[in-house]
Image (cartoon, rainbow, N blue to C red; front, top):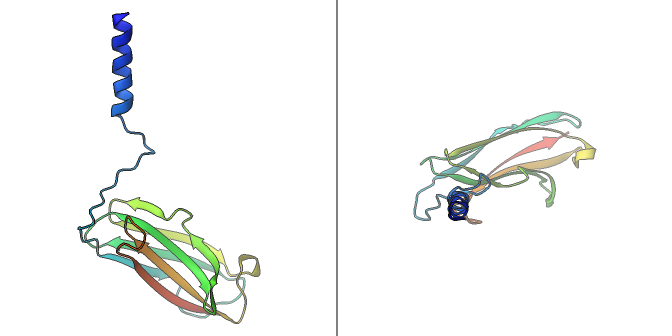
Length: 146
């Protein structure tokens, strides 16, 4: 019986001592300088055509190599910023401890995806720290669909 209890104790201590892969570690230091940047590499500001496929490439960095906690790319109609037709990643919390995160994606400028001809669109790349709004950086660029 003693061996059984000892074994149970050892096994239970292993379970509590080991951290699940799903559990996140946060190196959040609100006093650390993160010096975030957001860069929209693609698309460019050239006029586009309906049914054209564009490549989305955004880069977020901490120039001091701190964790990049949250990122988001949105595309919305310039005339109505509530008309968001693209928003990724689905989960904004990326927690990149190496201080850099990139997003690559392709989207077709079609009516099925919410785009319309003869309209202006805004691509917005945003990053922020551990808490909403903390060290927030927002970059935008615009393009027109003929």
